[in-house]
View 1 (spheres, rainbow, N blue to C red):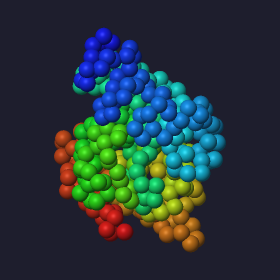
View 2: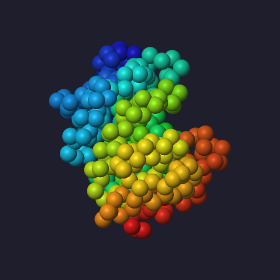
View 3: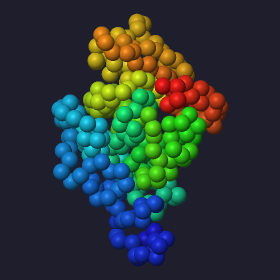
View 4: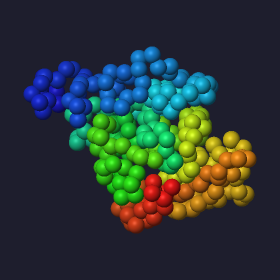
Length: 297
């Protein structure tokens, strides 16, 4: 939509701004922290991590999941990913443009976790999707992978609705929280080893702050490996040799004296490639989450 055109409500669109698909409020792409995007955890004074050491320091000092989410959402510690996500948000990457989202603003920032702060289940994916989380500001939102996963969480009793369209759409999780090993969409969906390492303290601190955590679901082998590295950094009891990722693989991890074991569960990632080819079916993903459902805990 050109600046001189009107949006769907007949209001003139300001140059460089586009309306949120739910609220109609105008935003630039990327979205500026603290300007009213639904669910934005950050404000104008939220500290910005610019280096890996900043991430380590700020993550370790976070006293709540809400504080951690705010810090994650403004981080600039992975410069390659920051530049990539911001260029996609500004529609500067021709091969990544999507006509269907041309009239929407893009979040374009690191995507914080979402869900129940008292969750017993943590679901960890690889990274936000370029036109999913990077557009909406919420992981597994606004794309086909979201449709597949959230419908499964609804069937299992974790989600209050079977769809995840955009931030502010009313979606809520009970007993479950959604996170990612890397917090920004990577080119070709391939984060570097350094990018995994830079973002690892966010996930490490998140696990520390989840006092009710009983199970972690890894969506795919890369998330599984990232979690394994974090568990090792805690000094927790891991089996040797390392258990390889597989769909419905299960490992009980010893967290130390007096603490109940943490169960790590593998699940194929609900990507279009996996779901369209039948590698991951509804019964397969239901089998993962039905055993972890709130009524079973």
